[in-house]
Length: 420
Image (cartoon, rainbow, N blue to C red; front, side, top):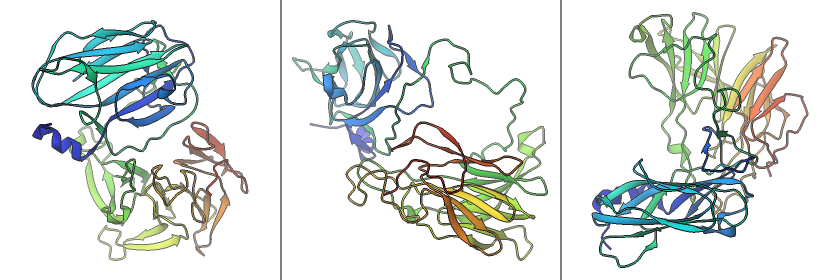
């Protein structure tokens, strides 16, 4: 078998097979619906071939929507014919265009495509399918140039992204069904009472993990470019390049190119919390909460003083989320570790984790005393505080956690995620 050179680079960064994602929906569809963006699937798995029937889909209840994605590797250019079998409806897309439309409610039947001229190399592959009840089937075969018969589309002729953290969540998923944005459909723009403006010069496009304003009106942002795991190994987070803090000035400029950006600190690691207390900037990052000081007066915060620490940070999914302050105290929240299913260092994605991980953290600014005031968090990537000091957190879905939790901080409370 001769794999085209153009496909060899793809294989180096991918896994053989396809990604299968399944989404439970509340109302049985008549045709393949469009899943609203921004939702995690109920099932997300790597499969060697596109051949699913009955229990082969996985642990999911009808009605559901299937989305199969990957890269099709064509060995020899020429005319190819595809055969798609499904129960219920299905659609096949190659490099964007629809090539087989086998939609609607029906039993297991097959439809062949017209002959398609494909060049050798890599082609984007996507299948959409739904099952409303009863039997369930989805299968894709192809007849390559010179081949007398159809054969399954399978590895090594399909590959899919390797850098996947296959996060899933329970519950029904929303579909695009013509309802208004904000009323069962995703928002398409900001509220008409707000104005959306670009506050960065052209070419400055960082990934942002934290923001706060300095007393002089400049906006400080922390860059955030996390590493991800694949289905077998964890990334070496100690090899990651440090992140930076930038100060953005002249935010009211009509021309975005009149806005200025200045690096004011580096050697921070995935900063996800920033706040200013009495004119001093504090940052929450992977292993600590630090006070940043400009001792020589040049505008660069070269001095980092640790204010709170004591938690582990060996895993790519262990962050210190958010940073709030009140009455001489700082507050942050720590996420927990995750690992591939086959990785031997963790029993499962719920643990084990070291002390403080999965906890609300309170830090006394003056003494540095650091303690856990509540536990059972998983990925608390949003903290908030009301004017009266009442605090809240948001949490992602996961083991023992429903989707998109919003909870008030009550000291001593356990919020449901076991870390052992």
